[in-house]
Structure formats: C-alpha cells, structure tokens
Length: 603
Image (spheres, rainbow, N blue to C red):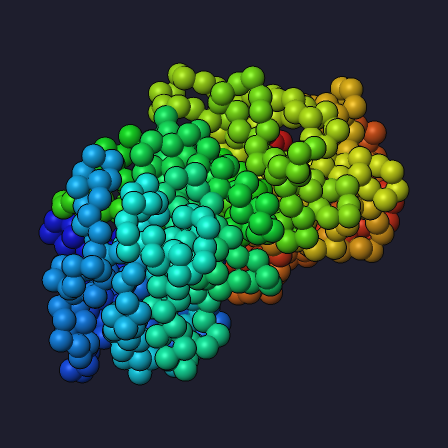
C-alpha cells in the first residue's frame, strides 16, 4: 500500500508504509503488522527496511499490539544458519517413502506425506525461531500475535487418495484411529505443533504470544476436522477463533462460492460446525477483490454490509488482506478503502459488545445454529444474535446486488422475518443495517439502529456532517432512558421513532471527530419535543471547549432546534458532546453537527 512495485516509485515506499501503518494503528484499530522476510540490518540477517520501520513503530507505541506474519514455506534456511536452501517440507530429494503421489482435481501431484518426520519439521521451526530471535534484538516490547500462513503440505484434500496407501494404513492402525478424517487431522496437528513449538517455546519472549494459522476452520471441503485442528492455535477464554477466508472477489459471488473464492455459504457451513463445537466467536480473513479493473471488485457499500453480518455471527476481529498478483501492481489509492471498511464494521460491533461476548446466534429445534435467515428475496442477507439470559437481540441485514450495475436493485428495502418467535419488519440497506431489539425489564419494547449514518458510497464521499441518534450514546445511557414508538402493528419498525427521555442533571456523552475541518461556523441541530433547558458542551483534546445553556420552547410534536456554535473551535480533533437536562422535560430524538444553518436536516 505504500507504493512498492508501482511504476516510477522510489524506495520511499518504506517511509510511506510506516506512515500508513501509523495511521491505521492510531486511528483505525489495527495492530502494527510486520512480516519477517530475509534481509540484513547491521550485518544481521533479519528483516528488510520496511520491516525494520514497523519494529520502530512498534517500539514507539508499546500500547498498540504488535503482530507478526510467518510463512513456513517462504524462508531460506541457509540464510539463517542452516545448510538447506528451502524449507524441509518443500524438499524434493528425501527418502521416497516420505512422499505421496496423487491426483488433485485432475492434476498429478507429489508432496510430503503424513509420515514426514518431526526431526525435519523441527528444522523449519528452528529457522523461524532464529529469525524471530534476530527480530527480538531490535524489539523493546513483546510480540502480541503471530499468524502463520498455514498452506504447507500435506493438505486435507489428501483424504480422497489416502485410503489405499499401505504406509498410511499402517500408521493409522498404529495410532488406533478408526476414522481417516480423524487420522489426517491428528497427524497434521502433531506436525503443526512440532513446527510452532520450536519458536513459541524456544523463544522466551513469545511465552504469552497469541498464535493462529490461516484457514483453520469448519469449511465444507479441503479443511481438516475443526474439533481437532483448532488446537494448533491459541484459545482465548476457552474459545478457539477460526480463521476462514472470506474472499468473494466479485459481487456475483457473495452468496455462495466459486473455487477458492468463498462467499457467505462457505462461512455459513463452517460457522455451523464451529458453533456446535462451542466456538461462538471467530476471526476471518477478508478481501473485497483485487482485479486490475477496479470496477470488477465488490464496492465499498456492498462490502461494508457483508462485514457487518460477519460481526453479528461472531467476527470479533479481522485479518485484512489484499492480493497484488502480477506487476504492474494496482494503484493503492484504488483499494485503500478496503483497509477502512472492517474498522467501520468493528466500530459498530463495539456498540453491541455485551451481546457479542455474552451471547450467540440462536439455535433451531434441531439444535442447529441459525447463521442466516431464509427469505424469498435472493438479494437479502439477515442475521441475528441474542444475549444470554436476556431478551436483547442484535439484528443485521444487507441488501446485496450480484453485479455493479447501478440499475440492478435499489439500495434498500423493507423485510419481514421471524426471530425467536418475534415477527419483525424493518429496513435493510446495501451498506448494512444493524439494530438492537430489546424487551426491557419494565415490560417495554425498544428498537433502534446503530449505524444509520453509514452510507453506501466510497467513504471519501460520505457526508461531512456528523449525525447522532440520541439513543446511541457513548456513556450515560441505559435501556431505561430509551423509548420507541411505531406507527404500524406490533413488530412493524418500517416507520418508528426511538428517543431518549432525558433525566434531570444526567450527562449523556457522545464522542466524535468531525469530518469537516474547514473553519466555518458550525451549528448543532437537535430534534426534540417537550420543553426545558439543556446544558450543551463540547470538549476536545486540543482546546478549552464550548459550553452553552439553551432554552427549548414547548412543542408536543417533533421539532428541529438550531444552536449556533462559536467560531474558532477545532472540530477536527477528538471531541465529546455532553448534553444534560437542567430543568423541564425533553425527549431527544437525534442531532446533527453541520456547517449548514439555513434549513433543518435532512437537507
């Protein structure tokens, strides 16, 4: 993304990469990420210049996780003190009994077999340990997480050719295993643990490092058995986070999958297996497409909608990737938005973290997890999650096209779905719509949207105004403050208003960084009903803040009121909007900070 591989780009890409990684880490919730390719620093074989810059950034920011990517097959052990030029698992000249010949989808293949000796695997692991120890010489803080590429032979596809292999039959019998599926998974687990233990246990600084493998999951084909293979990774609070690849690539492929490019159906099958094994959270690899023709890739709005649905079914964090396959590489300006979209989705996830961590998808009468809900419209994707021991739900939906033809479908539509006996109607959009549906302890029903301000376009083109729904506060708000009224039948939220019934002298806090830093007069528009006096203050990191006490005239209908904010305030800095009721009674629906003062929102 810094420009490496671009035509007419100098070696300044290392500096640019450092600046981009700093931006992502400080403002977009990323860890600081480095791979460990071969190279030299001060005569020590360790990493290249861009990798060294990432170590520098990690040392400067010990509060931000530092993540390292390893690649079992990608190192040259000879550069690390060993005699061989390729990883042991890739060698072609070992004893013939260590290899298998087989046919894979019509192509003859030869690769190492499941009897490959631990002594050779240990050499590969020690080569990684050698490099990590070199890296540790420059690090002044721990490595937080390591992810291994995890595409080394032998693969799970071998199960289709292994049953008649005398060596494998003998090995399986010696292990007293009945199932071939269990056999290849257990043996592969042993091989991977032998490899990773050389550095996870051999490098003292990695004792508390989280470790994962790419594509360890419950996917439908060419995947090792989840209940066994998951143990090659580090659990978190007893949960193993699967690492499926969600790479639909094209808008037409979001619903199913084509070859190696996996859409929602692949995730649905895998998540079903994983959740039945008790693993209700996961961490997918995600990419929206990498065609040289940018218009062939999934668009920002469609991608955001899909990522949000992944979050509702348990995606706590993402491994975000992009593939530059052949030079000339694609212009990073065309795909930088792909780094932003997972952060927008995860930001919404933080709004329902109680349901994410203390909840799960619902299960049907056959004890099968409901990953998504069927509808009569193939463009609709609906998901839901319920908090444990509480009638609180997160409901998500997206209206997905199968092409980038702007005339294929509209950007939003109303849907009706039955979730745990509740029939609900509401709007879903291409960019995703995430709702909270809750039966409160005082027998009220509340329904509100967490992401209304998100737009379908490229984020560069989103409105520079800042929209708040009063019920989506950062602090000071509980379900007892929130009320919903709807104009239709029970469960019909295609037209509704959810608002905050303000309590006297209680602070309602909303944090924001305004997207319009132009030094214009700003206005705070507030949609309210009732009458009273509000205290409104805005404070930021880089200024003394604003304070205003405002009287609101009585109205029994929803009405917009405008407050002019003083000039000279730095709206580009992180800010906190603090609203409290001083006297009277006011219900607050929503508010907008904008430079437009001539007419009330929406404009």
